[in-house]
Amino acid sequence: MRLLIYNIAYGTGNPGAFHKQIWTIHRYLRTSKGHLDRIIDFIDESDADVVGLVEVDTGSYRTDFVNQVEAIANHLKHYHQSSVKYGKRSLGRAIPILNKQANAILTRKKVPKWYFHYFPHGFKKLIIEVHLDGIRFFLVHLSIQKKTREVQIKYLTKLAKGSSPLIIAGDFNTFSGEDELRDFKKELKLINPNAEGLPTYPSSKPKHQLDFILCSKTLKVKDFQIPEVKYSDHLPLILDFHK
Image 1: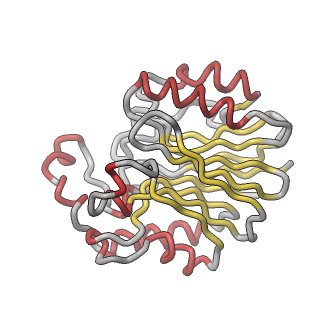
Image 2: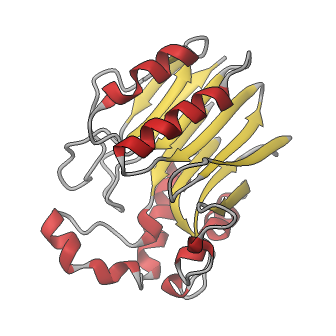
């Protein structure tokens, strides 16, 4: 099975260095279809069975009301589950553009079970859980605030406990390093296939390992890649594995 994880930055492209991010902040209000087309082509070529997308727009003014999840899923002919990343009573659900900012999981096979959970703390609260081929997949986008991340990680540890093999992936925003996840991995018996700790952000000149695919030790890892694809400010991750 192949898993692709990609923070696509709402299809707004790759601004490059930090100072360019400041001068191109307008891109978060309006983007071009060309950015999404390049992302779709890359995802299609990756031929992944499961695709986890972080920072995807489900049809705001920014994208001319194009639902990026549906556009990608329709092209791939994949099933999809997505939701706005903010809590059910969050202000984020009332603000234009923000109320279309989501995460999504796309699958080649139909998913028999899926759930939307929400962290009790933080602004970005969504946790997507899907069950496929006896594996529980979780997709997350953790807080940029370290103390909030710590609380979220503890909550996720309790939520993910169980006997089934696990894959927990997404943008963890671990600017303090992978050591933030040490106890989390130990408690859930997870490994990081990115054994060399290669950075994933910013894609123009990677310095931080923010994006992870963490999997149960019982799963057999065949290959792990970080393609040098710069269609977003994050690099994508690809994991090939089997039970």
